[in-house]
Every structure is written in structure tokens, then in C-alpha cells.
Length: 77
Image (cartoon, rainbow, N blue to C red; front, side):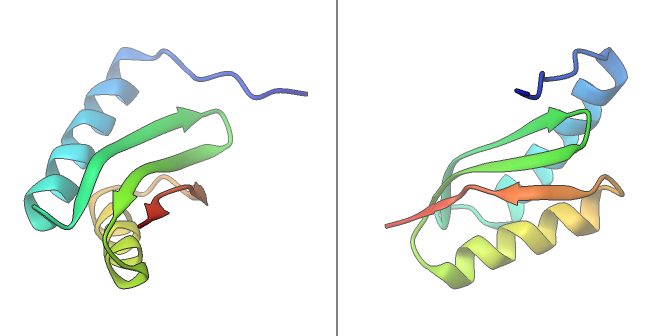
């Protein structure tokens, strides 16, 4: 069964704040960073220069929100 994104306005505002937090902490390290909220948690997406940067992004999200991270799909290239 495919998960459907939630569309709650408050949740979207929280996601926008969290994305801004991560982008400000990792400027130039993670590109095209995006959070997707599903009923079961967050999915992280984007592109990182290293696996360390991918991990830093995940930790920045964990600092900024109490929502659980289900999948880190940040691609390393």
C-alpha cells in the first residue's frame, strides 16, 4: 500500500522551518534538500557531497523536530 503525503497546514509550516534550519546549517553541503511528511514520519531527500554530510543533515533534522525520520533518501555524489 502506497503512503500518501499529509497536507496539514501546521505540519507544512513545521517542515518549512525544519528545511530552513537544515539549509542554514549545511549551506553548500546538501543541495536540493527537501522533507516529505507521510503519516508514518519524515523522508529526507536531496544531494550531499559525502556520507558525513548526509548524516549531518539527518542530525540537523532530529535537532529541529520531534517527528521521526523513516527514510533518509539523500543521495551522495
